[in-house]
Amino acid sequence: MSGALLVLGGLAVTMYSWIRYRLLLEIAERLGEQATCPGCKAYAKFRIESSGPAPLPDGGDPVLENHGGGVWMRAQCRKCGDQWMLK
Image (tube, rainbow, N blue to C red; front, side):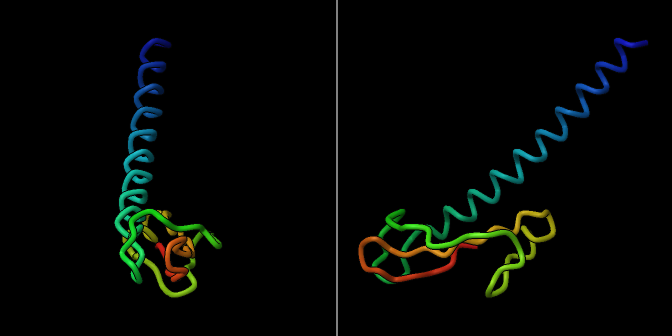
């Protein structure tokens, strides 16, 4: 009986971990898609000025907000100095 409870507990932890991993991966992919400077088109050449959880200062992505993944970052390009929001 205790072996079955251990297996069920292990399955529950595994499922929770898998769902959380997929959510974090989705957030990372969405932020990575926005890592190009809108001014000079340089990829991943930015500095994070500020960041925080939802609610976002200028609106957000409802898909991530519904899953509790509302993360925003204000970035500044190291090449041209342009600023934009990653959300």
